[in-house]
Image (tube, rainbow, N blue to C red; front, side, top):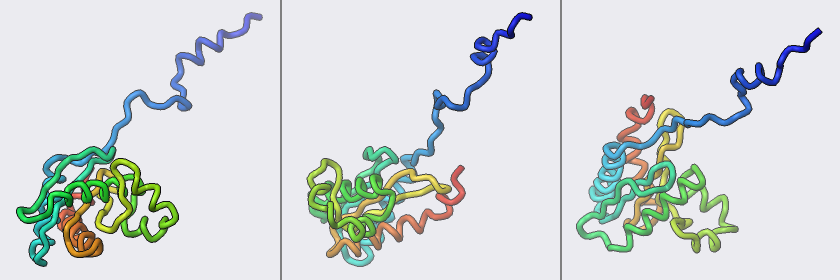
Length: 162
């Protein structure tokens, strides 16, 4: 009796052990990033603070950077590095600072990261799609409050993103 040619049959069937060749990902749009950055600046402005707001995409790449008219130039870099920390950790930069103060000095020397309050992850329908960092208010807690107000303002758009 001849044995069936199993190896050929096995090669013809899809194998779930291989990774997909194409991976669908959720990505923040320019329009949404721009809205979040502007709403962050506006939230701080109404409290009398001149800040910069930076939105990074899910890979940590710069999507939008805004510096209010009277915000110090260095606030752009700080806001971007704060957002980088939220992308890396997936949590608010203030939470990370509290939880991992032990590695703060090392991380502060890494390009694109700084362990300071003032950044929040941006999630759409449960997926991390970016982060917003704010710098320039007198205290990271105030920076983070402005970021939170901005994210809350687009909450519905984020919740129902497909």
